Length: 491
Image (cartoon, rainbow, N blue to C red):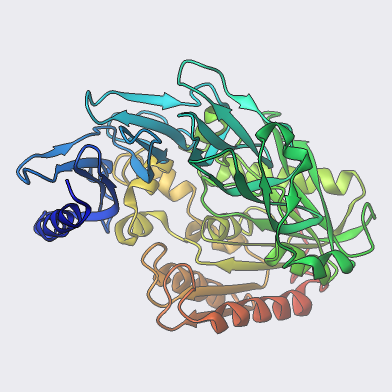
């Protein structure tokens, strides 16, 4: 088929796609098979079977086929080098209908002729955060284990992954040339800013040279330094780890003020990369920052990920508090200068932690939930809440009440700063309104900032992100070194 005819045919079929009864997320053209491959998506994630992979025959528009039935979310479509397979990643949460457990992000390939689906990197213990096809038919995999993201290769599904020894830190945005062995990627670590690298041989990864120097200025500054820190949960002795960011010039110092900065997700992780966000900024203001990879974080195996189910706040909350206690025991942290904060699921855990201990002098809550029955009823991914709590509110009402901060606000002592987006559908702003009202009635210092027209990511207006950080730093400065309203019966 001539190229112009093929393009015309694609345009006709795209018009046809407009009449499909569901929304389309990603679209991939398969010239060799004369097909369009696309993923379905739903604005409200109530059923995971709303998210599937489809094939449309460009010669016969009536031949619309569903390629998957896995009750998971497919993403990141790519065409194999030979043009006969489509690769895609599947991300958590897993099915609640079948009560199966969630897995970390996995990589699959589907043959467009026989519809056979195979898993790549099947025995990899960690999280697959990205991939790129190789010119010889294999695949490069960006795999996260713990706080590191490294490069692996797999030639076929029956062969083992090969780990390529590189630098510590995080590899990302990897691309491969189909005509030769050239590979480009971005790399960074705690003390090494992001740059783009190019190599001709993956086995010489440590010899890669940067082809950009856009962040050279960072290497000339005395910036906060980071390291991995590990501890055990005090109840079940599960090993937990996280990242410590020390203030500039105070690496390995003792008796420092602590800010616990909790990542969102929960299926996410804090990793060893050059972070220009909140953690080094707070560290530059004199805070030791702990980013804990609590139960539910990726990179530590599927069992670690799934242990959060049915105890979505109390279990990771205990992981985090055990880390604070360990830092105090090691003499690294001043127990009288403690702060906690986070956004999204980090906000969920922040709201929970200030009801569980009176040790925190100050809290920063961003887009956090307060009551999980109403959260389930109003957010755009109710399947996540159902999965985390192990059922609907009417199935396990005791869990929804036991794990909801609203029923324990009488225990809060920490002055709390709250931010939310006016149009947030991921974590509706009403949750922040509830928290602000409850703390106001309790006489706890509280400030609520609502960013107009913003959704969950606060990305519509770049000034809003700056205002958020500015006001949170002011709140930390105002209350971070003050004694709590009461120190009786500390826990």
